[in-house]
Amino acid sequence: MSWLNRNNGWALLAGLSCMFGFAPFGFYVLPILALGVLFRLWQHAETPRVAARLGFVFGLGLFCAGVSWIYVALHDYGDMPMLLAMLATLLFCAVLAVFPALAGYMQARLPVSARLRVGLVMPAAWVLGEWVRGTIFTGFPWLSLGYAHSDSPLAGYAPLLGVYGVSLAAALSAGLLAWLWNERWSRQGRIALAVLVVLWAGGAALRSIAWTQPQGEPFSVALVQGNIAQELKFNEDALVGTLETYRRLALQSEARLTVLPETALPLLRHEVPPVLLEQLREHARQNGGDVLIGAFERDQGNYYNSVFSLGAADEQHYRKHHLVPFGEFIPLRPLLGWFINGVLDIPMGDLERGGMAQPPLQVAGQQVAPDICYEDVFGEEVIRHLPQASVLLNLTNDAWYGHSYAAVQHRQISQLRALETGRMMLRATNTGVTAIIAADGTVLQQLPQHQEAVLNGIAQGYTGITPYVRWGNAAVLLLIAVMLAYARAQRAGTES
Image (cartoon, rainbow, N blue to C red; front, top):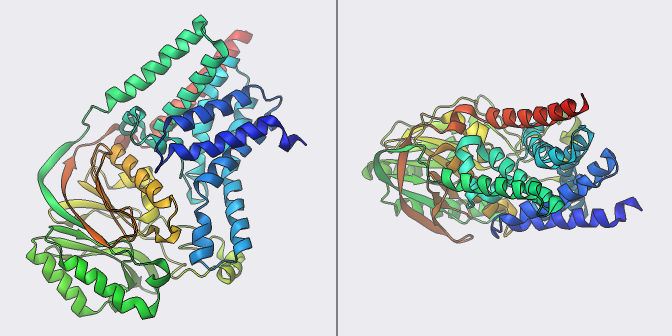
């Protein structure tokens, strides 16, 4: 059977190995080597259909290993039957694997020389597939290759071209390695090695550039990690204990900015006890600053996943714009609503989107750009707050994914947002990973997961603009188009 041949086995093994390039493992060279293996397999694929199959098998290995924590949310906390949750997780991974398959098919269809195929076309097709995956059907850019390089020399390309630019540098490295393998130590091989060295040296040099500048004085922050188990979060019997936990932890803070995580208070804003709100407001004022609180809001019959402020500044609100399909809204509700509601038990699973162009929150003397949970996966959306915002803030609840790798992968994603924007990123989470991330993507402080604690630290506002903030993803997409056009033109020139 064609699906059981040796090449498919190599593709599956290469895809599975990619997981070890991402957090918490951090062997960032592994995904490059794995992609190099896939490129070699694509080179020897007899037809575009075979190349697509190899890409699909690689993608299936990558996503089954890397995002299988979806099962935890569906089964453990969404109460979906085990077999159905396993099938849904596998189907989800299979859908994601379609994009590497399309990249394989696309590169095989383009009539270019063997060297240009592996050196330009395959890397360009791979990253284009990542971008489409991160855009279509509201997008799922998790495990884009660039995220594995949050702490590698290639991260220097993030302020220029964003995470997809880092992915492109990594994919080009994979292509150069495949080229080097083909050519061994011929003249062409030496050229490939020289380009590879320049690519990595360039990334390392770019990491030393400060694209933004500190603005104002540093300020104190307290990021509250309540560690409320997901099975208790919306349990009415546990509500009093939850409110008391966050009240107690917040009132311990002497920071100018105190942040509670996503939906820390599992109530609608108007249902929160007024005495609790007044205590938090007064305490924040005594600290000369503000507290930011995650909660749900109801407005004109619509429900929102929100953040609101209390303290020295006037009360302000941010409402989550980029919602999670099936978790916060049901796509094609007339068609799928009956089924999803029948197999999943997710509280507040049908929310409205907040506005796309919401201003930063003016709190604690800063212009804070908040995003809620999954929103910080989309760099092109985070930069909408810039250059006005001086600090980035992510409030999240990754308790949905238990003790899986989801939370540390999410923290790594936040590191890229800091790199892209030249802003510090503050992360307040329910069960982890609560962290303070520097403007260069370095994790300065973080709390252990699944522990009740408060992360006290110092943050700094920044001003200025990186090239990525100015261009967004347009620059890397233009670069990909130029690479493909050049490869095609070279082939056309040879034919003439």
